[in-house]
Image 1 (tube, rainbow, N blue to C red):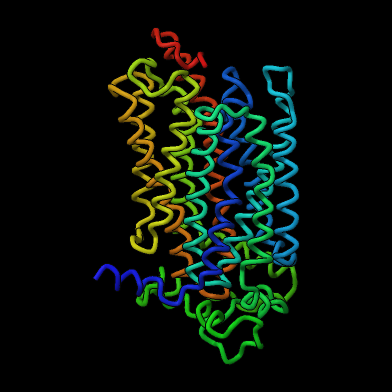
Image 2: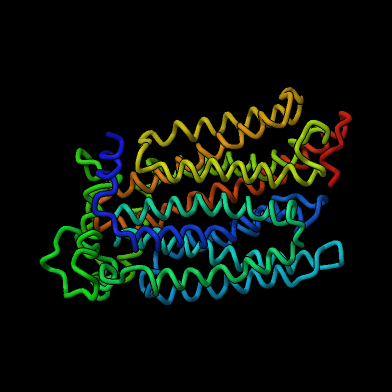
Length: 441
């Protein structure tokens, strides 16, 4: 019975679409995760890790805030080539700058982080909008890939720099070549027929079931059919109603009217989709950047030899939870987006109280909480975009998928400032009360 249910869920899936979007999610997000995992090594223990978070997210936030209103005029191929270029340049700049212990300039490293952030934010905006043309399997594969990026990025960095003994600079240098995979995925793996259909009208959606109006495709007929049928399976709800009303005339009314129309669309997206996504990211990144660096225990009784080992391990376990929840959308759907967002806030409160009063007895309980934190965050992210795909009209969907992505960056930006305040406050409190672990490496 489970096997037949699994086959029904994935009926009509295109393997090329799934592989391409999984790689898009993996590579676009993996550098972002590696940079956050390397925060302590980039700036040292004396500078709040929230500084790295802000450099890694504010440029992304700015791109997501403004780009949805004009980026549709740039072909997807040109966008991807540009984002790959600046991503590789950013990682090379970080890797080639000497470490802070050898007199390297932290500002130069942060400039590299900014470039990588611009690429990550623009890439997320681009690939989420691109899922509109490839159906719900593209969205599901993207989400799983982004979850995998967190797990692989944080886990690989922790293993490379802790267990395998690689230098931080060597690890970052290797990662600078990863963006090339995006080019292979887009130009070599992804079927281009659905995108070519809208070349003359890039803001118009592909009507997935209207195959008779499609121009001849260079792909095999069954490949195109699988892509067109995707909206009949995964993540689709038959009882859904359109969440957003139609907007009148489109691009022919002029660029100004298009801008006003998109602003109105964004306003209608705020409470059902943007706010819960913002809240969950605000809570989890305040935990990760502000509270987690102070969740330290005596080394005896833990699996670590150095205090610097706690932070990457917490991040890797958090990313494990993210990967599981972002890959579970085909099987489990959450329609009440506010519930997991509020549960994330509860976790923030509990861990902050522990950092102050030290009532959790061992690090293994913290490990479990970090996994749960990742599960909640990943669930809100994927179910937000799945709900948009279910409830927003086809003609508004491409814009809505891209525009809503600003919420996670907005929450992370706020968390970056809160995280710097939290980390300094909690560390000072612990030192004043005889626990100085946060000052050690």
